[in-house]
Image 1 (tube, rainbow, N blue to C red):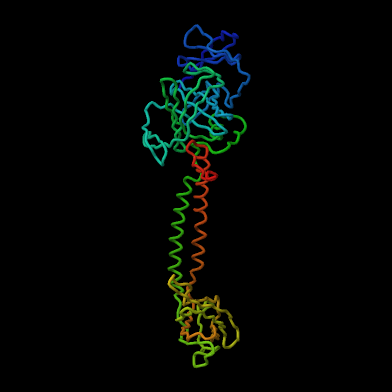
Image 2 (image 1 turned 90 degrees about the vertical axis):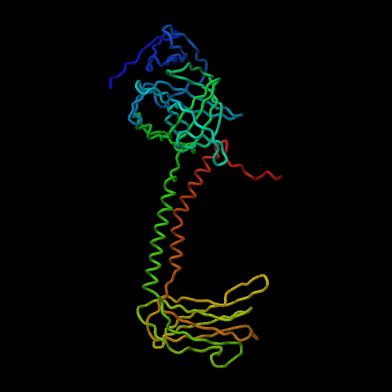
Length: 429
């Protein structure tokens, strides 16, 4: 591609040289020496506006700098600062005019370290509504209304394809679909639509080969993409697959640890009764626990009704005397409002060695309680699903945290919008 040479004119105000890089497209240019705005549309260069301001702004990307965005090389030929004043507050952003003699004009905007690459569109978007907000449909993309403002040009440098002056104002409206933003600029009798794509400082520094490092960005910009946008879906997808694996492990565990009954018997008890199988304390016949060290589950099934019972247990090795002591309470109450408690209970004793065992049982009830019938059942090598429940909860943490962070990011984004959620606090007094 041949190199296109810049043209030079003289400033009628100070006589300094002024380069024209936009050629016939340039309608106005700013003298870099005296900052006068010149009419470059005719051979007789005229002064459109003399600089009378007190503040001079420094562009981050110097005029004449060339950089490659995508597969196209652009040159920075213009720079302006736009300001918005709202009551006692004001803020401003920088705009850079980029030019390629074969592709035309593009723009770069920068605000608080957030950059956007902007292209003027020729097609018109379609008005619509979405999520309770005004919106614009442009192509296949839906853009939500974000804010509107009146912006004024407070500083210009370089050349422009329109007759620019300090003090020019436009009414802007922004619609976002991160990382894109659709914007309109309205002047008397004309509306221009443009589409912007968010870029980072490092991307700009790499594109224009700028020295040093880009300044850090502050806050969250209107169309800044969330770093959690793609990770939320992937983290929940990973969670689903991990739970499939977890379910497979549960079935495998049920297969290799099905559990089998080693002892079962029925009893009756009332406080003070001493009949057979209703003693206040007794021991069961001996039973055998086979295999490797594994758990033993004791289940209690009662016919309690509006009453309670407490059981003291000891699982004792008949040969070594090793004992596993534990207790369990069972209570069940009900009335016209519903029921509370459970007639049944269970406990798991982990890692019980093999051997001959018997169970010592000592039930307790309140004095005068009716007979309680109950069944004791001991099962060996019982699947313990508590670990899998804990694993399920732990697996929830990454996707839940990612979803929370994304929600926080979006909440921070929309707090800066004209359509920020309204707070209900402090309105009732």
